[in-house]
Amino acid sequence: MKCEKAIEKYLSLDNNKSMPLSLMIHLFACKQCRKEIEDLRSTFTTLQHPPYAISLENKIMQQIMLQKSYYQKVSNFNWVAAGLIIVLSIGVISYSDTLQWLSLHFGNKILVPLYLVMGCIVSGYIGSYVATHLKKLEAIAHSIKSLL
Ligand SMILES: [Zn+2]
Image (cartoon, rainbow, N blue to C red):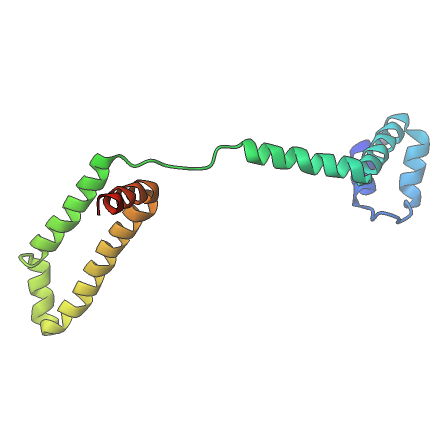
């Protein structure tokens, strides 16, 4: 049995499962694997010890808390540009050939789904803007409230 295979076999064993004879023979003959398995056992024992586990958990939580939260800032220019594109699209769509072709095939029935889609797009745009500018809007609302 090769050393890599022996370590692999040892790692595949369950916690209290006894070692197969072939692995025991290899460990008897191979000092390097014996040492490596002893190190592994010591590491496993250390990891199972509660104080170490708690401190490890605390270290991980500290690292998580230190990470910056993901936040992608969209410039005001991009918001205005996106809003203008949406408004222009809504204004221009009534003159498009595609809408005339759709109206020819579906009649006025196509207008309701079209308006629903436009409403969803406008709602999504406004909802996204409000969700990303909540603090700014809250400050504006407070300043307006203080004026009244
Ligand atoms: Zn070995």
